[in-house]
Amino acid sequence: MTIDRSRASTLMLAAIMAAQLATVLLLARAAEAAPAVAHPPANTMLPTGFTAYGFSPVEGGECVAGDATREGMHGRAFVYVKDASTPRPRWVTAIPVPPHWYQNRATHCFAMDGSIFVLVQTDTNQATSLSQTLLNVVELSPITGKIIATRDADVPGIDAAYSSWVDKGAGGFHEDNGQIAIAGQYFLMDAPNKHIPFTAELTAHPAK
Image (tube, rainbow, N blue to C red):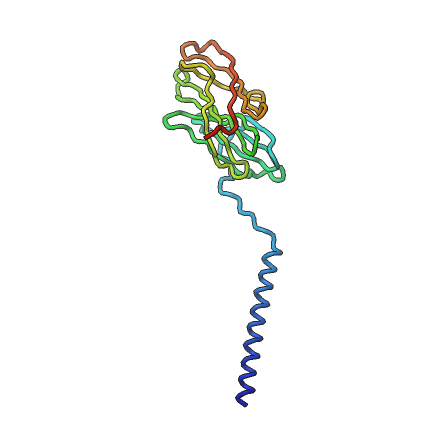
């Protein structure tokens, strides 16, 4: 009788373990079959007051460059990538203003060599007569929008104080044989009425 009870206990324990194993396998298969849940990053909402300046196709969508202002003042540069399959941005990146400067705006962008390059134009002062507009190029990850690098885009050969800008349109900021090509205008701060064209080229990934 003792042998029968022992055998029955063993069989019952084996049955319980088999049932548990079957449950685990069913849950694992269900998890594999279930579609992955997308968790978009937090920075996918455009700021209030956003105005777009530049557009450029990128893989799977479009890059949009612009700024957000408060009643037309205190602009802050923003860039986002809009997926072709949905109106919601893949990501939205704010490009900070340098300390003690007034405002900035992203005006152009394009994709090259696995990155997105953005032209940012920054005003140093709220007073127009005192403000310089200076240019820099920001490199972003096309996947996350993370800022990879930031470089000044100075007007070549000018040592005096100046203000520079690039008008709308792809001709002012684009790829040229693997280089970043910039074409705009500038004036010296002591001769603001004399606008002078300039061109500049930057390497996409300078040696560190």
